[in-house]
Length: 563
Ligand code: ATP
Ligand code: MG
Image (spheres, helix red, strand yellow):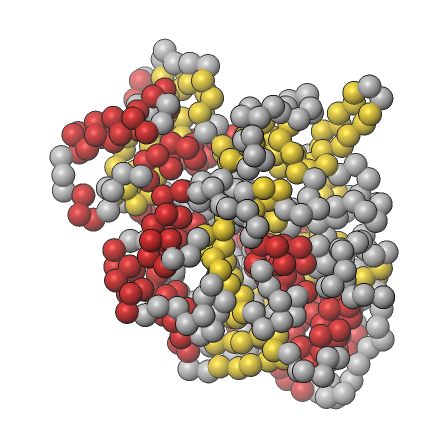
């Protein structure tokens, strides 16, 4: 039988990513490279093969057994980008232990919240995260075992490396494939529009279905090298973990622990044979600024040929500017922690800058009305995925089981549509978009971010993209502001390029408003504009703009001003 990598992807009844993917590539005679790892400060480099991860993950599985950690238990992992992260993750999947990765930026309170919510029995962290965990340990009674990766272990914790040393080099566990719908991962969403939600994925929803994302969007195959700059705590980091390895490609990992710097990103691309880059739109917006442009010219990437972005809407102007600098396009893709890539710009059809592309192969993504029927061309609606009969082998399975509730049940936002006896079940993404006549999808905004001014619905992304066309704008965030006549009006918070900061603000405001009226439908122009520094815009730890917080601030201050 053909391996899943070569065949049309079908959902198996039983699957184990460690056995079916890692061991598969490890068994090949050519000793494929799985990871190229570079330490912080670039003082150490390691090339690690699939054989290495196969072996190490067997040992981790044995270690988990010896520590009394059983299948179905949950492990919260807060470890920076060191190889141990992947050794532990693959070992846990091999054993059926559910992993719940989180970012190193979490506070003690966040860690407590996650351990309690997920009823974790194991906490794995680096020295700093373990210290934070120990401060709230008494409030996390479900946690029995604490493993520390690196640094001198805190009292009462086990050193991961020392414990693994005690496991024989050839120790192994039996190959066990688990029911496809048994839980494998628990991720928290980014928290852009409220408290992060706990998303449960099964053995195939991420681990296997991401093969399509890898092949069609990242264009991966053995010999290709993927660098995804997302931090380990985000679902998007898992996209690269499963994607690259499902295709036998190399995962490039740079143990970056500092704030984002466009120069450092370019330096890494210049020094290492990375072929595919996946970065946030925020990063690309910085890469097209003057300083980065000059650096790029002197330090062009060594092997980069394919650029992708996801996580937030990507302005068309940024795509054009990056193309002018590098000759490459940025292939925008849309997905959620809750899913694999749902739509994107794939090879085989030209990209339309500003569009999220077309539904990914095999993904039944549509735009639907409030009543659950599909919208007409050009009409705004909610992005939704048909999940009628996910238990069937031929249905799309790259989607989460649901948000985990306190009583261990799961639930998701769904819409059931029945017409002429036909019944459809849609998973609702909470995002609004439009489809053009050629099937390209255009992002409008998160449902809660769409502005309603005098009966007109205005998506913030279009206004932000229009502003980005003006040479003075680095980026902007567009929200609604209260207005006695129109109910709501469009307000833009605008970050200016340094050279424009000293010009007369009133005339620049007017210029930007006229510019928007000319370059988009006039009713969408921002009636209010406030110039702000970059740090003013509230963001999630992963860098996404939190328009809901801006909106709350705006409505509070405007209402107060009127009293
Ligand atoms: P929360 O659900 O906690 O509010 P979040 O939605 O930002 O946070 P993620 O799952 O990390 O959490 O992000 C998915 C969301 O990011 C999508 O629902 C969409 O709003 C936005 N997004 C992702 N990719 C794109 C894209 N290419 N274009 C526009 N928006 C995107
Ligand atoms: Mg979300």
